[in-house]
Length: 386
Image (tube, helix red, strand yellow):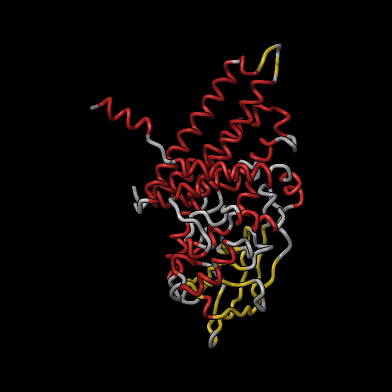
């Protein structure tokens, strides 16, 4: 019996042949359409908008979304495959930018009306419009319950005043899924509105200059008596906080996947370098200290990835994973911190030079411990379950 269990466990996998076909398709797209140009996009601070339509045509944008809105249904691991292969572009900024719909659309799908889904989901999955999520404000990052952007109802419109910052795809977004205050202070007074960039009173800053994620445009948004139709309210008024918290779970899983892939790419680069670089008359792999460092890096990556996959599988099965996905994000980010650091150390001076992938991975990694809820916020969430 023990042998039979071990045998079954050995062949268990989260991915099927269907997942492998999707992975192959996305990898070919990345190799052809992204890798040859991504260094230039990093310097430009954005990638061509035409890529949204190209990605839509090969099914990348619609993976995991309902067919009636232009998507391709499937389990959570189809989206994981897409995310992992987009990260193989070597640019987390590109992956974050092209994937900003994955944090903007889920609240609309979960709580919106059929008409709202037709208006706000379908064009985005077709690559015709760009969607972003707007939660964070200049006055407070993780303190979502105390956000200050107000939306006051006036007949069939909301008059929105306030500001949002650190918005991925914010400069070019055609629509944002925006958290606003429609009621009293605290979590019970928050709602979600879809605000279109063409709305009167809507303004966008210049691209914010960041330490990493250069290929994604990031903006601060301003609302000055911005007029938004009441028809753009997602779900019930003053019930938006629950939708935001629900959305955060998927976002944290995505960030864990990004962290694991950042670490994986750094490990791969370090392995290649250690096998070719010579020091003191022999390859770096000839030194025990280097081999053991790489072993430690590989072990951390493997453990983090396996735990993240397990949490994803439980989420897909409808099992509450608030604690576990917070753990997965924190662990994946700590692994990515360590592995990117050690990869740069292995490269030595070259790891500090632009033009080497490990340098970009090291920079891009830093925001992962901040986005979607900081490490400290994750620990507070986890502590409530202990």
